[in-house]
Amino acid sequence: MNRKMLVAGSLLALTGCAGNVDAPGAGGTDDPDELETAPGPLRAGDVIAYAAETSHPYAGGWKQAITSPGAMFVRVHFNDFSLAKGDYVTVSSPDGAQSFRYEDRGPNGDGDVWAFAIDGDTAIVELHSSTGGGHGFSIADIGHGTIALAPEPLMSGEATPHSVSLARRPGGGTPDIVCASEGRENIACHSELNDQQGPVARLSFVRDGGMYLCTGWLIAGSNDNTLITNNHCISTQVETASLEARFGYQNTTCSGPVTAGVSVRGGSLLKTNSRTRARSRGGLDYTLITLLAPNDFEETWGKLIPTTAAPSVGDHINFIQHPGGRPKQIGYWRDAAHTLRCQIDAIDQTYSGTLSGSQIGYSCDSEGGSSGSPIIDAVSGNVVGLHHLADVNWFNCRNGGTEMSAICADAGSLISCVDD
Image 1 (cartoon, helix red, strand yellow):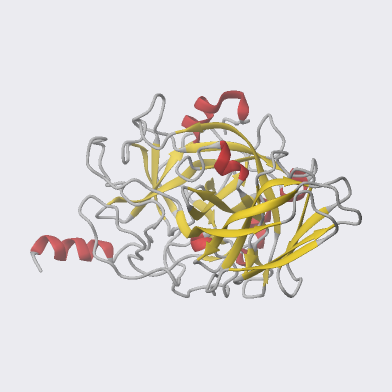
Image 2 (tube, rainbow, N blue to C red):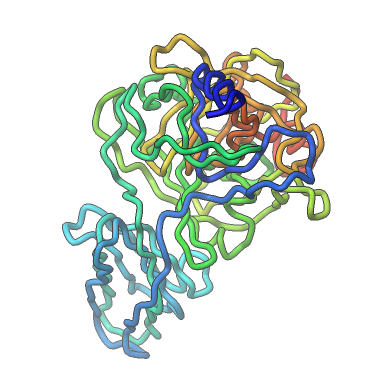
């Protein structure tokens, strides 16, 4: 091994930052033209062909087990979904522990319905009808999950199941690496932060023939139930309509059992801004959408407040996330010994073709599925950044996020920002 690699390895051993497999390629340089790998959401499965349908029109009920051998979860995709008034479809697990109901023309009113995920390789689809007379539906494809959405919880101090030692790439872009020791904890270990963690959700959605995972959060805005995540996660109305946002998927206590939480569907795409400056006004990597949720949903789960206040190097942060699609965790410490607090390490940076001077860097673990997480100022409780990049500095294994001040300026009245 040459001297440069020895020095790099020594520096890396001093940090506690985990690379984010869903966001490689930031490079730690202010040169937007440097060749880098674009971030992407964590792939959790594939869309595969499937053939099933009711008669058209249907008469009475219909029931079928939709099985995809080897799948960790199944999402059923209905086409031409149209039921008579009073009829409904349930998509359930074989034991009935999970069950979701769909009526009329589906939640979005267009007959195109991605049912919520059912754990395991089988979903039971049943049409409940007393008289018949509706059009029915067809199933032309399904989502075959390759990542377990209900794994065993990660105990404090354990290595994550996706964290492995990989060779680092010049200029950054190393997927899924822990530079030193794992510092994240289950969010329930910090009950004092319940107001901050409640609005954070795991996102599951469909795009380009795949099933994907990210993180998002309820943000104060002019529309009820507004959620923000990355543009490199969700950027179209089709992806928005396929979204299952699951709130409260976390441990009940620090080392206790995991609660399934509550799933709600994506509604309307409000605004998006591309990951890089390649497009007009790009480089902020955010998307705002509404959720099809009850009017009191924000009262139950809360919402986070973005701030235009500039963070400072050394400010402590809380990095709340769903790494690898697992139950909610927090980046609070940078090391397993809990001696190094997560903090802001750089401000006003330019990473991976982002808008000039729009980025913050921080030493705190992340992973595939963490994209779209809030970076919260530990003192004010307001959000200072939107996480989207990993390994932005090759020698420091640093993560990166877009400063909320830049997003506030671009989003305008769609979000409600404070200045402190």
